[in-house]
Length: 169
Image (cartoon, rainbow, N blue to C red; front, top):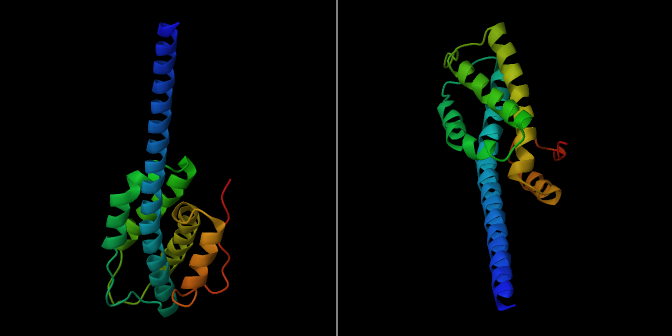
């Protein structure tokens, strides 16, 4: 009987240890995904604002550096990809691929052509779509998303009256 109890204790202990390790790995991946999403989300807000300025002024800014958001994406995309659905990854990665291609056509301080404006408008829509994907990962609860919008509404152009995005199914 003693041997059975020892074996049973070992099995239960191994199962508990495995369960705790699995839970801890899941929690760590979730935390890394959230941190990555928050950093990516910040760059998306900045990129959206820059594109809105380009579309309003119909010219490229005198100072424009698209390398930081592209570098952020390269640094954090693995953590983000590890915890999101394939379609979410594809939508956000597509935006950053387009941003990189657009960065190669920018003519600092020059007026935008009609083609430039069309590309900027498409890129702005892609940035907004990417942010809709990233936000639930960056700010996991509806209550927290509302608080973020409330706190930022006066500081980030375009957030006034905006409802938080809903979880994608």
